[in-house]
Amino acid sequence: MIKMCCLWCHFVEAVFAQTKPLIQCVLDGYNVCILAYGQTGSGKTYTIMGTEPDKMGELHAKSGLNYRALTELFNLSSKRKETFSYSVSVQMLEIYNEKLRDLLAPTGQTKEYPFLRHIFLKLADFLLF
Image 1 (cartoon, rainbow, N blue to C red):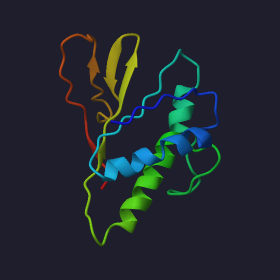
Image 2: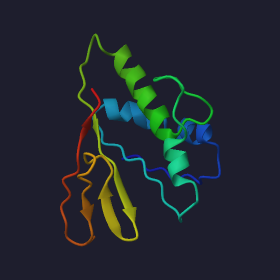
Image 3: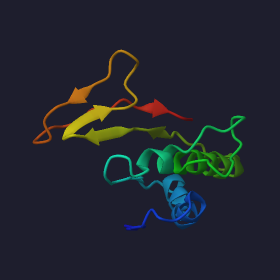
């Protein structure tokens, strides 16, 4: 198991450089979780999401960890396509004010989980490839 803890005072590029080896782990069959934790307004969403690229697949200085990680994932899987085939999906969960919310639930069907104790979550999967 790889454990990593970063102080989010770095630029996103520096944080991604430290987490980039985890993308290889995904393709090697390991589960990876990217977690942002902190008070409201501290920059968690910006660090994770950044701003959208001008064109799909193109990164820029304000690309967040998600865009960078997915771009790297697609690049690595493309290099291995002659040898391996992959099925990759993502799940996104928000915990805010002690409530859980499935961020990938279909529009209008947002699932909220008001209690944190003794629950089993069936989050929506978003199949990437």
